[in-house]
Amino acid sequence: MTVVDIARFTDDLATRSGQVIMPFFRSALRAEDKSGGHDFDPVTEADRAAEALMRQLIRATFPAHGIAGEEFGDEQTDADYVWVLDPIDGTKAFIAGLPLWGTLIGLKHKGQPVYGLMHQPFTGERFVGDGQGARYRGPAGDHALKTRACASLAEATISTTSPHMFKGEALAAYRRVEEACRLHRYGYDCYAYCMVAAGHIDLVIEAGLKPCDILPLIPIITGAGGIVTDWQGNPVTDGGSVVVAGDARVHAAALSLLSA
Image: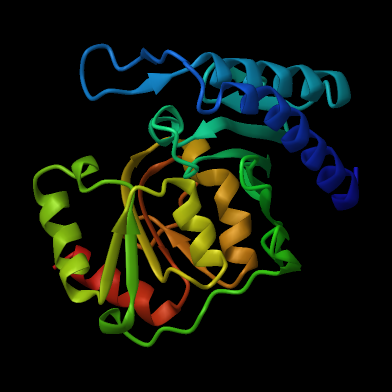
């Protein structure tokens, strides 16, 4: 299997899952709460239908591959190749009618992320990467993605989906970084990570992520020249607390304040 095969197949997954999702967007869709009575964690028929389709296509095309998905769990995750799926990253935005969500499709080989795609079917945008390069395709054309230079936190734009994801000392640590930044923005889920890759946001800090929330984005961000680690500066593929930066100087400054 070549990278071209992966790219073509992943594009098809994105197209076909988007066709399933879009009739539900800005409809009278009802969301279920899968949190068990804690923080509201919605899931919709669109999430389940899109993931079910992608799983069907993967099984038919690559029966030896594993699958790890947001809605239907793990299959053959000891395989050399494992697909990581989040059919709607940003379901809260989705049910609110906001276009700040996306379908995440990732592929890892022997535990390492090797390909990733974020598809926003409402805006018609795709962000793809393989760790060596990354590209955008959409209304703004087809072009390479590159993070922007940012010398310090004082010049940086930071994003997190919500400060409510941080508890106790983690919230205090996040606030230290946010207060050092020039501008902060909330509520973007996977879109914020892609904006780091595109050179519009400098820093994303989050906590409590699942593997499917971050692994598909890693090849896009690193392919555009960015850095993805946990709060201690270690590689992150299993979720948890994440620091993403477009410039190594901002990344180092954020890690320093998080551990202060």
